[in-house]
Length: 229
Ligand SMILES: Cc1cc2nc3c(=O)[nH]c(=O)nc-3n(C[C@H](O)[C@H](O)[C@H](O)COP(=O)(O)O)c2cc1C
Image 1: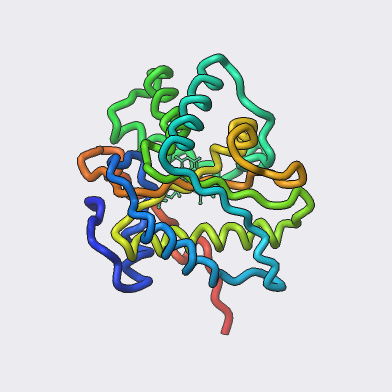
Image 2: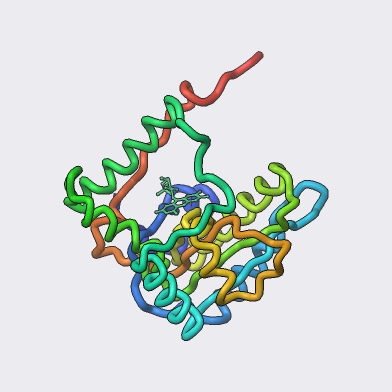
């Protein structure tokens, strides 16, 4: 399915046309649009109304410097101890196979073979550039938060992603930044008691980039739901 350039007019459409975009155009996101999205996302619900997210929004020169530093840091062989593991150790099926298939489908679309470690690494490193998006966000939360607050932050992230579709924009959620939090701490005003939870790229998707044709599978209801009556 081709990348949608249209503005979503329903939640159903926003959900259906939201994909993780891994190549953006350099067209800037107008400030008023960015602010409207952020204002609207404040309505995200959270347990006890804690609103545990702290959001760092980068554009322009700050984003440029942030990315340049991140690329240099990684190229020099650095990587941070993740704030949280992306997955449980020794991931099991069916999740393990779903994860494997996503990677294989993406690299197949890009024409990057199994043994092309350099090609895979280069694509992986696009994360560090926020996939060239004009807006990069880092979401942090207090180190003492519990799993339910992590869930709240995930719900907040989904608000941003769906709202973006209403403005004809696309997003890429990025757990990546949990592994590169020192880059975030160097450039952003993150208090010591906060940690990096997730990042997000925001911008106009590049519909000429093949990677954006990836329509990741979803399990049928029969695999993930049980009905009781
Ligand atoms: C919390 C979260 C973190 C993610 N982190 C990354 C990431 O660091 N890099 C990346 O390329 N995709 C990342 N993704 C995208 C997932 O791979 C993607 O959502 C999933 O494969 C489903 O595809 P879709 O978003 O295109 O529907 C992340 C998604 C979520 C929800």
